[in-house]
Every structure is written in C-alpha cells, then in structure tokens.
Length: 293
Image (cartoon, rainbow, N blue to C red):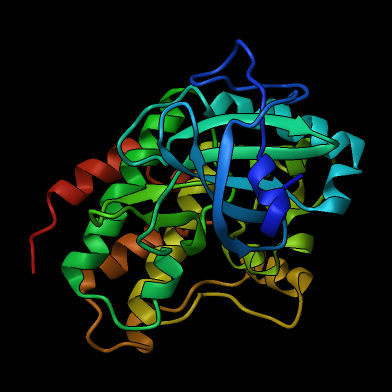
C-alpha cells in the first residue's frame, strides 16, 4: 500500500462514515489523503510511516499491516472489527486512534504521532520511585477508562506505552489482542515477549478480561522494580507454565533498594486468582496514597 520514494506520495486514501475521524471497515478507496514524510519503523505486525493528512496538515502515524497477516481472512476481519472500537475513544492516557481501513488488500491504522519513544527504551536504566509511580498512574488511568467502557487491552507491555512530545505517556495498539483471540491465534507465537506479560488464566484459555490487564501491569511494575521479569524461560510455553505454577520472588531479592510499598503492590497485582487482583480504579486510589520520593 505504501512504499518509500515515488510511491510514498500516493498514500492511503478514502473516507468512511463511521468512527471518530472515519473509522472504517472496508476499502479505503481512491485519492491521496496522506503525504508520506518517512518510514518510522517496522515490527512483527506493522510497518509504520510518519504521514501528514493533506486536508488538515496533521502529522500522524500510519501503520500498515504486513503481508501474511492481511492474507489471514479471520484475523484481518477481526482486526478491522476490534480496532474500530478504539477509534471512538478520547482520553489523555490513550493514543488517539483515528481510523482503520483497507487499501489494495492491505489493512492500515492511523493514530496520533507520538515522537517521544516507547517505555521499553526507558527500561534500559533504573527508574526513580516517582517515575515508576507516574508510569503506573498513567497506565492505571488508561485501563480504568477502558474497563469502565467494557474494553480490555489484552497486550500490556512496555513497548505499548509511548511518550508524546510533552512527555505524556500513552497506551497504544488497542484491539490487536482481541483480534488474535477472535481468530484463534496465539499472540505470544507472533510477539514472543508477550509471554512475559500473559496472565495465568489466559494461558489456560480464559477469555480476555480486565484482570489480565492488571496482571500484565503487575509484571511491568515488577520489571521496573527488579530490572527483570518475574518469570522467564526458553519458550512461550515454558514461561506460561511458570505463570501458572510459580510464585514470584520479591523484587527486593534482585534490587535491595526496591521500595517496600511498591514491592507489595507488584505482588498483589501478580495474584494467580484474577478475583484477588486490584481493579484499575482501586489501583488509582492506592497510588494516591503512595508518598512521593
């Protein structure tokens, strides 16, 4: 659909009537709505372009689904359906998803441009207590909003949190995990690091639900405190078995300077029983009681 060089100028095009700025579930149509400014990156699922919408001048990220995934009929249909729900959400801690559609057999997704890099890149150094609490508060705020709306993200990992130009952390890529589940595909088979954040009940076939997001947030908190994930192994299956059966060691065993209140919070979020985990809303209330550094 998009390429660098001369073909970049053709862009993705067309407009539909549904969604916030035209969330679509069909062909993108003809035209030239986007000027491609450059190729921003590539992952397992998407090729990401930095584009300018000609009508508004707004700079956006356009994510084009990679070839093999477009040819999987159940997955592409499920992705169109699930991602369209996220195009109607407007919240400060969520990346603003604009539209989803298809052009020439390639599914694409546009979202606000976030130039600040992902949380994953920040985890290469130790975070301060205040930085950890700030990340937690932003993540819990986004999840509380989503869960209240009846939505589950399903793929909470550091790379899904991206900073905007002002340093605001935003959650991205909503709807992708739901599409994998609907198509009967295992996300961890495509995104191996997703296994580190997979709740025990999800490894046993349970449906996507808010407690799985909370567990994944607990893994993220653990990693920020300990400098490592609580469970690792040679394969996604081995990691899944550890999520089911092993108790997480206290983060302070790996980082003696780990704050005790945050350590206890991480272990609470990592409860094997989904009903024993805090909700996102109650987590926000707990964070309000945590003293600054």
